[in-house]
Image (cartoon, rainbow, N blue to C red; front, side, top):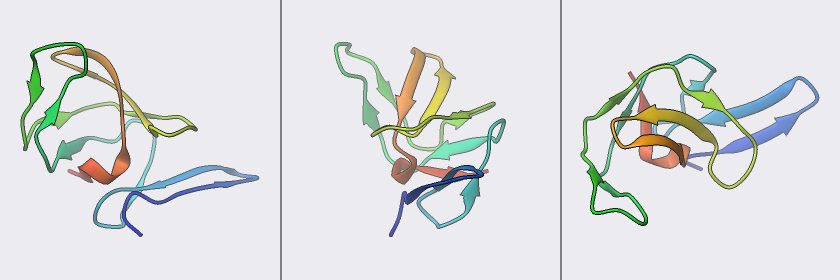
Length: 80
């Protein structure tokens, strides 16, 4: 399953769209254009996002983009 999340005793395991494991501080790339809710801004495919942070919940990745701080789903990201 793409964008898979497992929560173990050791911590959070999050996989990107290609099945690669993500970790805090990784650099990722968007694989799809994403509209920012409540704004007219769109995050374009290929946008690099540096220094991600993994969180539990529906949106697994906390990051800082040009549109501000965001929570993103791992299924729209690939490890760079």
